[in-house]
Length: 123
Image 1 (cartoon, rainbow, N blue to C red):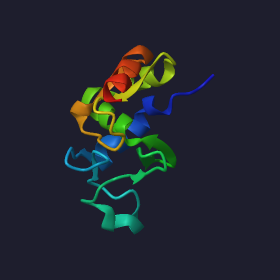
Image 2 (image 1 turned 180 degrees about the horizontal axis):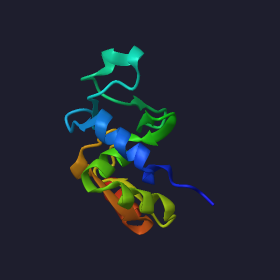
Image 3 (image 1 turned 90 degrees about the vertical axis):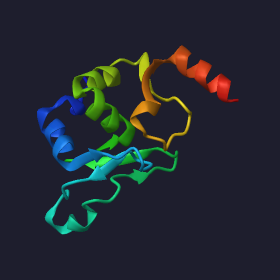
């Protein structure tokens, strides 16, 4: 059984208190509270690092999450994101197919057929 860590209250509270939506930034997130005392310099800066595949990832309480999932959760709710992560038929889709564009209006929940149609229109 997979425990969905995005659903825990501790993770939700951390995200709400540490991140602010920042659509102008590639990750879509800005630090508003430092993750630790030694990281005070991060406040006001973009949260997250870019992966080799082009997505942004953030660390929350020692666990890694894709930044677009945190952005979506801050806008639409953490329970919805947790449910999508459990459902293998659904995933998150960047509408413009740009993996590092985590603007809230660019992220949607999509099934595989929707993603494939979107992929075909970009080719």
